[in-house]
Image (cartoon, rainbow, N blue to C red; front, top):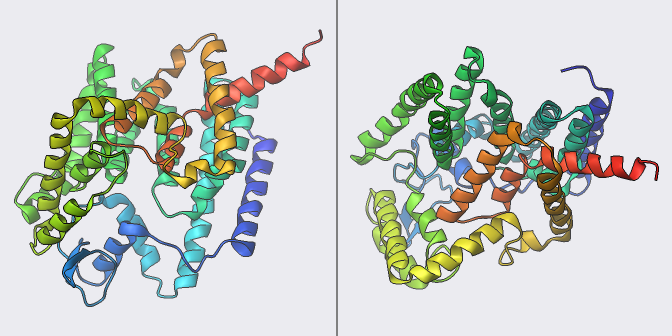
Length: 399
């Protein structure tokens, strides 16, 4: 990729802006690392890869130095181990500042990769527009200040999209296979994308990449599967949160619900068992399947509701209703539709379309949150940026 002075300016201005936000308006003392951080703390304090524990007649998972948490497979391990170096820093403020600075560094990589991806599909101008959108849209800026997998997901998926359309190149094939593994360890549901890609490659009669990808992915995931089997005496492909996520997408109420009072009571009773996560997972699976069987029409309706949440807004989540989030997204949707109509040759965008279909399928199977939409949007930027560039050209044409 040739040297691009505008791209350098975008990265510098974006970095300065984010540092100003940290210094002026962001409370770096209060950062929640969620379940990932709690598991990381448990590992560092000799409690192993663990999360939940039973205390005061209820299930808990907040970090407690005196707790005896149960072994866990609730979260996939990649982000947990990513956080461990940060958790070794005892000074909370120093840890959080370092974390945020690393986040900014990762976001700069994402800006660059977004530029490269859009330039590859279209041209340098579209790449600059795409990099600018990623650098300055509020929701992408916000992802810098929230612990979670989004930024890492963005740099890994853009890297994959850059390589995956040329798997006849052995280097691309090997790196793509490794990226499949890392992404699955980062987001367990990504295994569905791997499966979709393998099916697509088989349809194209590209059998050699199918064999290599399958071999590398399966052998690389086996250590985690083996670890889970030795602890839980059951094959757990990736996580014990699948049942919960299925229930959150298939319940008698609305997508995203965690539990009603009856389910919460049942879970507290299960929490006395050391294999709580297994029992919880089975319980949620049973509740989800029961909901599907008892009211299939409700399930069909919520399919469209979940797609609406992914591709437009989730009115039940205040984050979706924030104008800094909502207004840019409305314009992005219109620009995406414009691009889908106007882009003359879409054949080279097949893997982007597969990526978007994958996110839609995951939304249907499980549910959608605003951050899942943000994770998906990285693949929309090339098309949206092309649309902005095309509209700009049309305005500049002499009448």
